[in-house]
Every structure is written in C-alpha cells, then in structure tokens.
Length: 123
Length: 123
DNA sequence: GCTAGCCTACGAAAGTTTTCGTTGTGCTAC
DNA sequence: GTAGCACAACGAAAACTTTCGTAGGCTAGC
Image (cartoon, rainbow over all chains, first blue to last red; front, side):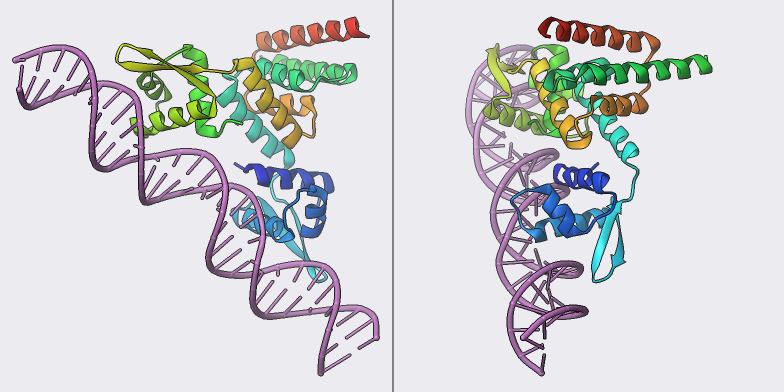
C-alpha cells in the first residue's frame, strides 16, 4: 500500500504518464529538496511501484501498476477500514468534503446504471 | 489525521459507542498485545481523538469527534490525493473493490437525489 | 582541460508509528 | 493478610517513512 508521499508522486505520474524526477519534483510543488523526491522514487522503484527507463542522461519513471488497480486497492481498504464497507457512506463523506456539480452527480448516476446492468446480466 | 492503527480503533468505538480498552482490544482481533492497544488509545487521547471517563476500576473511552466529521475528513483527503477530486472515480474504485447489492446502489441514488435537491434550493 | 550545471547514488539522520516488557495499583477470594 | 488477577502507566525499542547532505558522474561552453 503506497504511503502518503508515495501517493502524491503516483498522482503526478498518473497525470504526466511518464516523467523524470525533475518534472515530478517541480510538479509536486512541495518545499522539500530534489534529492528527497529522488530518494522516494528510488524506493518506490525497489518496491515495484514504479519502473524506470533511460533517456539521454537521465531516468524516466512511470507507474508500474495501472492507476485503476491502485485506486481500487486504496478505495477498498478505506471502505473496509473507515466506512464499515458502506460505499454510500464513503460517497457521502466525499461529497460532504467537496461538493460536486450537478454534472458530476449525473455522471455518477450513469455509472450506477451500468453497475445495475452488470448485475442484471449475471443474475 | 488518524493513522491506520488509530482508524481501526476508531472503527470499533464507532460500533460500540463507548468501550474499555479490553473490549476494544478483543473486538479488534489483531494478534498484538493488550498493552499495545492501551498505549495507542492513550496516545489518541492525548491527541484529542478520544475522551476518557472513569467506570468502576477501569476507563471507558469514546471518540471525541463525530464519526461523520472524521469520515468526511478522510474521504476528502483521499479524494484530493488519489482521485484527482473526482468523486465518481472514488466510488468506482470502491465498487470495483467490493461490489454492492442492488439495494445499496439504490440507496446511493436516493442520496444523490437529495444532494440535487440541496443544489436546487441554493441556485 | 577546466568549470558550471544537472543528474544519480548512497548513507545517515530525523520524525512517526507501532509494538511490547516491566512495574505499580486496586480488588477479590481464600 | 496475601496470592492471584485485571488493569493502567511508563519507558524504550523496533519498524517504517521522510528528509537531506555529500559525493561522484556526465555534458556543454569557455
């Protein structure tokens, strides 16, 4: 399970696709040193969270696990830990923390419908 | 922000309402020592996450912050950190990790509707 | 060739979280 | 009273995360 600092780096890589340490570090905007970001990314590579390839003089990193899979893992863990398995409570917490536009709410409804259809197929 | 071990304890207290260390420890079912749970709960009390009151010979603890508020904080943090602020993605991750029954999906829809009504009022 | 600038590597320190052993206290039953 | 039991308190160690200083390598420009 990625830690907080690791998750921040993953989020950047999810946005950029693949990036150098410099790019990630600048994008993070934290006020810590470049070598801190580098070290964290090196550890993440050791753990298997990132993969690394050469490019000219420097290294290019990218997430080695699909975003969706990591997100599923994190959401599932939180769901179990803090929300008693209730997806409704989780969503309520999220929407209370950061209200969504009507458009977003509609998108959620569309997604729920597709889940329903899936259930229909199997039963 | 509560840590992992702290969150597990909070979850138990949310279920039990108020409980002694012994009750929490047994409920947790982890294979660590009683004193570990005690120490963690003492630290949580210092941090202000729990309040303590006397009962007979032992102490009774309970969460000092409403469950909903803590859940909102946690969900909001994760939403921002790992899901780019998209509540839809968060819910997708949760449902992918642990499929919900049709009844649960319907409950979510009801909740969405009430959010819509709230939006309607303000605009 | 030498210097400046950018990068990686490494190791250690600082900070947190989690764990547990030991000790002291009060209560109960014998 | 005293042995046994359950609990609280404390301190320290272990494990893990996060941070950074320093050193070494490569390239471009002078």
